[in-house]
Length: 145
Image 1: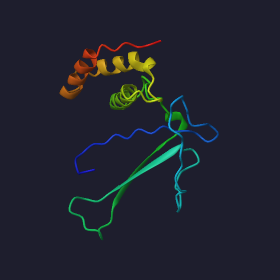
Image 2: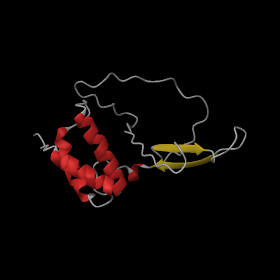
Image 3: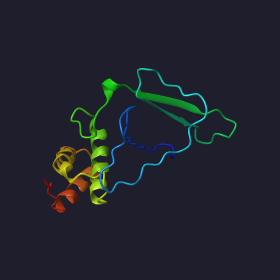
């Protein structure tokens, strides 16, 4: 990711003892190789994300900067939770809508009404969101029971 750019990453967290959702048509779950090295996470955290970067123009020998954030059980939100911040709601709505458009097993058309509410609420946030709302409305989508 280049300097000055903004990225949103959405992850689904599956807690220990729970199973990964597997709706009809979902791809088979695969797992990668275990990660070697120390894992730094506090017992109160569900997940910790660390991001490392180097300043523009840095050499391979220059040290990297690092920041991190953790998620605790008290902070856990569902993607369409009305208490989430506006950007998170927008990003999760776009991801949910994309899954519906792809007819992915994880896309649930029952969420279309809530997606429409979220995006309509952000119509005036900026020109890009406003144009998307107009496009979304032109699709004449309706939630299916």
